[in-house]
Amino acid sequence: MLERGEVANSWRRERWDSLRLLTPNWQSRLPGHRYEGPDPDGYMTMGEVIEFIERFATVSRTPVRTGTNVRSVRRTDDGYRVTTSRGEIRCRAVVIASGACNQPTVPQFTDAVPASVVQLTPFDYHGPTNLPDGGVLVVGASATGVQLAAELKRSGRPVILSVGEHVRLPRLYRGRDVLWWMDASGVWNQRHDEVDDLTRARRLPSPQLVGTPERRTLDLNALAAMGVELVGRWAAVRDGRALFSGGLRNVFSLADLKMQRLLDTFDEWARAHGCDAEVDPPERFAPTHVPESARWQLDLRSGEIRTIVWATGLRPDYGWLDVPVVDAKGRLRHEGGVVDSPGLYALGLPVLRRRKSTFIHGIEDDAREVIDHLTRYLAVRHSLA
Amino acid sequence: MTTIDNGVNVQALLDAREALKGAPEAAQFTWRASSKWQNGVHSTTTIQNFFGLGQEQSHKSETVFTADHPEVFAAEDNGITPIEYLLVGLAACLTAGVASVAQNRGIQLRSVESTVEGNHDIRGILGADSDVRNGFNDIKVTFTIDADASPQDIEALVAQSQKRSAVFDALTNPTNVTVEVA
Image (tube, rainbow over all chains, first blue to last red; front, side):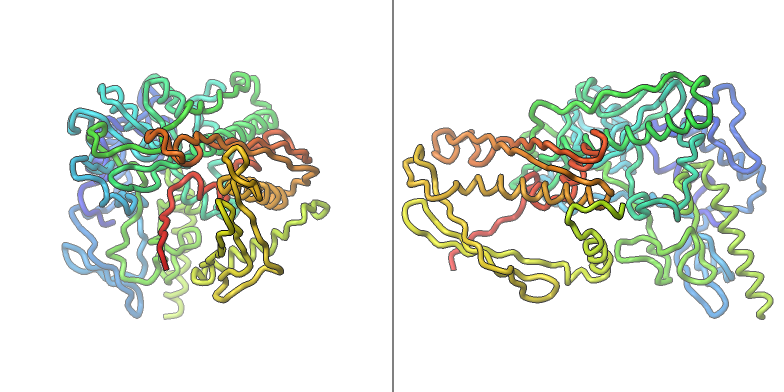
């Protein structure tokens, strides 16, 4: 196993200081290793996540070669040649486990933002103290966007949040963590070949969740109540002005309707499985409140905004992969982790084989199936040779 | 599902979606209109041809649209005002979306009606107040739908029709517009 930095490298270097896992501690489980602390319903801090993964590396006796950066992977007659910062490796099969979040994505019009405004991505952001005083425009309302908007608002700055399509979830539903419901009701186990629109499922933004000791909900209503101003999706820059979409109401409706449908699914599951008595009664949440008139433009030169935080998503980086298996949009071509090149596999990508594929506890089932395919591939190759 | 018929050939649309995924050139359409000044603020605009699927295309017949201003604008009122054509486009586009999405989701429609209201402060176009914009300040569309579906499913139909609407996008998001003298 090759690791460019240290074990749990991206958790150490590519996360902001206050981040906690979105999943509750009891869901942090890997084969032969699980959370055993005093707070199963809590959410791990980054320090705790790093410790958890380090311990797993130790107990699983994974042969990790740290400080080994992969520079290229090339196909050879009988497998792959992997060039690393510490020399070359020849192998018959490769599993790509470098994740889906290697680089921040930002819109093309960032160049048109006046130089007086500081621009940051989540990879540059550590906490409010490294931002200039004054207003902040957070772009994107995924888990990252809502968490940074809340933290920056609490630091005393005026915050505007630009909202496109998003996934709204309550932290707790009927007294249980919403991710308990995802797990128990089987939604998370839904397989890639059962999902209606797999392309869409793989592109879904992360849900508006935050892990806090108070287990609070951080949806757009919560942010508006804190004084965060909501505007539409940022569509363009014209003459130094940010122009926002006038379609804010509809992205609220879409997210509210999808959340309701998901909660209906949970209720049906609870009824069908006789669990109604174990949880609180069904509840419904207020629709996302539409501002009286959301502004659709903002003068970026006025000084109102000193900083823009681009929480507009992350993408994988396959710059080192010299095998033609990446599509025009930079996505790996694979079928449930079996990549379109013999002996090449992937793990840990969104809805790789199940909806839970990118969560810590979600990797186990995927890994078994992908590795099963890999060992059969090696066995067949071996017998042919 | 087989008994549902809103008159939309969803299969053809789904087939086109699949086919155009691999052929983005064929998906490039150009819609055209030709306009001619009549007199005063009265003009006629003609539409028949467009480009798409890699070649010139044509509507079955030519359509002529007459635009003018109402008598309260001291005009002859030979036709609706240009900004009202935006309401026509928005209503028609969202309605087409509702029918298509309903067909795709197996929802039988019995009636789909909507009213569209665009609030417009005409001090902008008159140059009476430079803080007032020329276009609509806001637009409100109200649908009344009778269908074999729950209120929640009907809400979802209307939300999805906005998500996939060309005119809704054109009105809510900025578009580069170039106007030249030939």
